Length: 124
View (cartoon, helix red, strand yellow):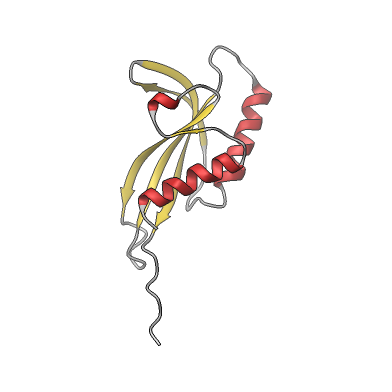
């Protein structure tokens, strides 16, 4: 699996959980989950020859409306979608993110996914 395929899996999992996923800054209309590639490393994937990619996953609620129950429901859905894929602990932090020239309140999760090459078919 490539980094691109890992990203596609991440988007598919979020959308299957009923969440909107944005992969471009122009697609942001809250509530939305905005995705960026954070870091890529081959540490931890030495034996398999792959890479570990950490995606920055931002949940952007509707700005100006404090909605504890709505945020909790969204985070429950995000965790439900991402826990089966993640290679490390998931922790959400309330913060903000600046995209272009606009700052949005958000929750950020760093999600580590394995991006390993597809196995070679066995010879007979």
